[in-house]
Amino acid sequence: MQFKSCGRVAVLGGGSWATAIAKIVMHHEEKITWYMRRDDRIEDFKRMHHNPAYLTGLHFDTDRINFSSDINEVVKNNDTLIFVIPSPYIKSHLKKLKANMREKMVVTAIKGIVPEESLTVSRYFQRQYNIPEEQVACIGGPSHAEEVALDRLCYLTVGCRDIENANIVADLFANKYVKTSVSRDIEGIEYSSVLKNVYAIAAGICHGLKQGDNFQAVLVANAVQEMKRFLSAVQPDDDRHVSDSAYLGDLLVTMYSNFSRNRVFGTMIGQGYSVKTAQLEMEMIAEGYYGTNCMKIINKRYHVNMPILDAVYNILYEKISPTVEIKILSDSFR
Figure 1: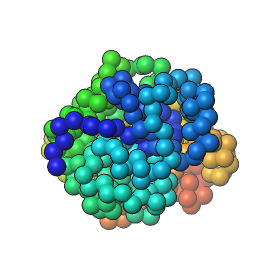
Figure 2: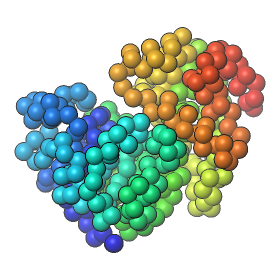
Figure 3: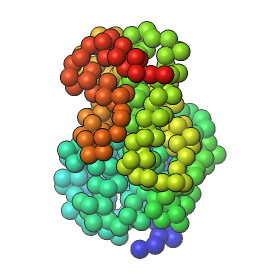
Figure 4: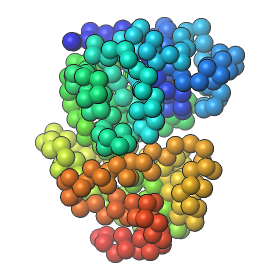
């Protein structure tokens, strides 16, 4: 099926990035459907005209939003489905989904791996719901939700095997503060968006250990090389340039920005917090924690040399001292 327009658009998810995505698409769409799991959140949103839990300073014209907690109704009645549900929860959210998605355009703005399946989100949708690969797209690139809320310039790349469909989705997202580009490298963009979260945790750990800017620069340089090795092994692509914003740009902003929850999570670990305590105190999902384990499992198939991934895994899952593990890692750098 070849899409000529996005048709009726739905956003599925209730977090900060979902809220930012809704703001972006409402620049072009007169009305959207917005799926949220909790009816009490929906009622609060309607009453206050903003998301009661995330980006609370961002106000919406709720008359232009059809809220629903019925995922089957949302999928059935819309043509383009933008999924913005944190990857650790995607399977549980979709358990009730019975509506056919084969004729839909599915866009994943989820920067994570589906746990237990160890699949990218796009691949999971294709296999689980029998959606043709040309009808699945992903969104990547440096784009903190907090900056979207402030109308600060950001750059998004739409990955899709069908470039015409990618352009249609890109037009939906483009506006005065969102610049868009397209790519066929959907899996490369998705894997890089998972790895950058892992590397942001590493950057945070080093920050918590009071490592200086010199070491952080070397960490970033090695992270770029590690990402390139992995992407080349998993999905060779002569047209891919890791220096593009969908890869390097997203990596840099996630490793350096104070808006990065993965960096904040890593900083707490470096300061001596346990994983559980850091997660409880943050009250937000650091997807890199789950992504680290998933990428470790995936790399067992490819055997790529990934010392930064291994170090973060050892700290988070093997409970090895961050001081010891980062010392070992630093000795491997050039």
